[in-house]
Image 1 (cartoon, rainbow, N blue to C red):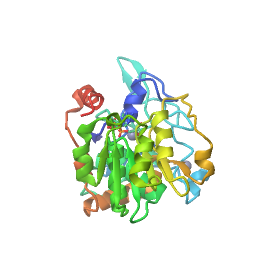
Image 2 (tube, protein in one colour):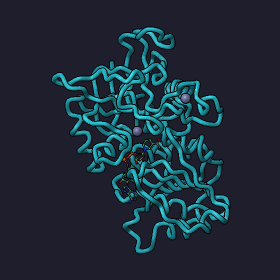
Image 3 (cartoon, protein in one colour):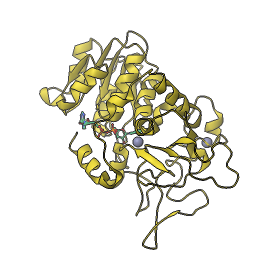
Image 4 (cartoon, rainbow, N blue to C red):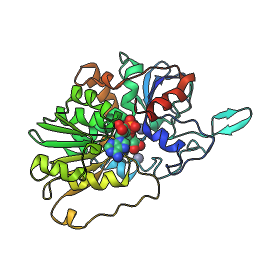
Length: 329
Ligand code: NAD
Ligand code: ZN
Ligand code: ZN
C-alpha cells in the first residue's frame, strides 16, 4: 500500500517521451513510501505491516555490480532491462480490462502496487511516510552525488546547476561534507531563497549575465570550482558544468537525465588537463543496504529533507502536482 509519493522530474521526462525503455499506458511514480499489505511466496525480507520504501534502482545482490562494493548500479535496473512488466513478465495493473504497465517496478502513483523483493527496503517503523518518501529518489540522489560520487572535501567550493529537488539535496550534501562555498545556478531565481536556507552561499542566474555561465563561475573562483553538479538534464548545461570545474583537479558529476539520443560536444582539452567527469545513479547508494540507513539518519535529524516539500496534494490531484513542477513551483 503506497501511503505517500513525491514527484521527480524523471516522471515528467517520461511524459515528454524523453526516457528510454517505457511502454504505455503506464503507472508512473518512483519516489514513494508505504506499508506491506501482503507478500508472495518465498519473500523473507519484509512482512505485512512493515514500513518500506520502494526502490526505483533495485539491489538484486547477485549481479556483478551488486557484488562489487564500489558499484550501486544493479544490472536488473530499468536502464539495463525494461521494467514495464514484473520479472515474471506479467503486469498486475489493469484498467477497464486492459493491461497497464509498471514503471521501474515500483509505480508509486497508485494506492496499491506490486513490487519485486529486490526493489523494496524495510525502514524504521517510526518513519513518517509522507516525509521519507523523498528518500526513494530525489533526496538520496542529490545528497549521495555530493557525498558518495564527488566525495566533496571540507573547505572546497561547489557549484550546483539546477536547484530543484535533486539539486537542493546536492546543496545539502555539499554542506554536510564541509564545503565552504556552494554556488547555486538556476534560471528560476525564485529557487534561491530555499537554496540559501539549505546551505548555498551564492546564487546566480545565467540569464543575468551576457557571458557563458562557466566563465562567470571561473572568474568568481579563480580557476573554477572544485566540484560541479548538473541536476537539470540538458546537454548544454552538462557541458557548462564540466567547464566550470577546475581544469586540473575539478570533478563534475552528471545527475540530470538528458533526453534519450542526446549528444554532448566538448573540447577534449577540458579532460586532458585532468578534470574528472562522472555520472551518478541514485546518489551512488546501494539501495537496499543504504536507504534504510538514510531513513535512520533522517530520524536522528542528521539532515532535514522536510524542507524540500513545497506542496502536499491528494493522489487524485497528481496532475496538479505536475503543473506545479512545470511552473517551477
Ligand atoms: P526539478 O524540475 O525539480 O528541477 C530542475 C531545476 O533546473 C529547476 O529549478 C529549473 O529551474 C532548473 N533549470 C532548468 N533549465 C535550466 C538551465 N538551463 N540552467 C539552469 N537551471 C535550469 O527537477 P528534479 O526533480 O530536481 O530533477 C533534476 C534532474 O535530475 C532531472 O533531469 C531528473 O530526471 C534527474 N534525476 C536523476 C537521477 C539519477 O539517479 N541520476 C535521479 C533523480 C532525478
Ligand atoms: Zn527520480
Ligand atoms: Zn544486482
